[in-house]
Image 1: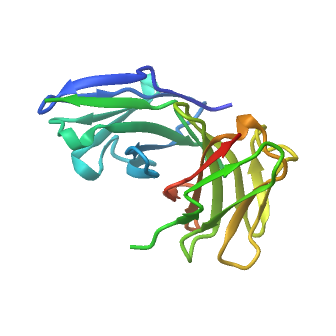
Image 2: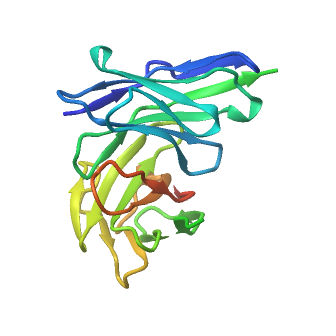
Length: 112
Length: 115
């Protein structure tokens, strides 16, 4: 069965610093990959998605993610973090069925 | 911009009571979902619904749970006899038709507290 692993439960970065959130998946083929963000008390909002083609995908709010087949990874990056980026970030996978499954999430703290 | 709406935003109930959580998905979407997030934990898939029937469900979605799309606009999750461990945030999501590459659009959630 497919699975999604986000190894970091929480990460703290300084405002203006770069950010990378890790995501690894377990699946025999290339799944559909997503990153969602959840602000406190809010639902989940899609940041970006990967289906095929260019392995570097751009999303909203200045985020990007790179799919690396050899590492089964889909890490999320941002060159310069803003205080408003503090939130919980979820990596998600769909292997072509009805179900999209989510990782455990990484909570991002931004310090001034 | 179209959005998924959920009611109530917060419900407190006694153990053993029935609860119905309501969702209005985006109007032209065809796939509907319920997810659950226990406080501080991961977002867990409960059930997907397509063409007026359950298409997939998780092991969490036992006989105490049911879903319904009674009138072509609402999508409801019913918990027949709530347990303490059902306390969680419940998210409804919907997706447009086509391949499963589509984005899930989430509502803001219904927080259920079982006492």
